[in-house]
Image (cartoon, rainbow, N blue to C red):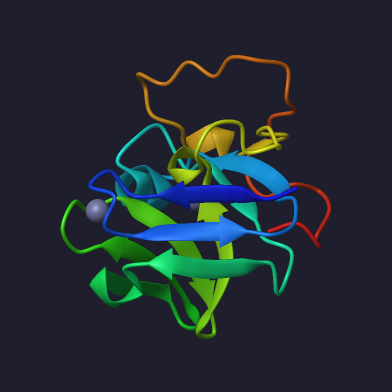
Length: 136
Ligand SMILES: [Zn+2]
Ligand SMILES: [Zn+2]
């Protein structure tokens, strides 16, 4: 089983050889800007499972905090992945083709969500970080 994904203009494409992990949405003000929406929609990759299949040279990168960043298509602006110390850490759920095989299983930083944000579904909601310190 594998998954594929890419950007809006289709210049950049990737492939995932293993299932995604830890789907989540962070509603903090920084994630709202970074994802241009109500928050992040993101899941972690299994290490070694990710490869670019097209257009890697069309990516640009923004460092969000030391060691952490995000990659975008420089043509259409789609946010494709999160980076940690130069390696792909996870992907944006909206960039995956079809069913990514994971759902958002927690909402975090709900105390700082936008006034216009209405969080639906039955996934647990946490005011800030989740209680499990291993989960980011
Ligand atoms: Zn693009
Ligand atoms: Zn956030």
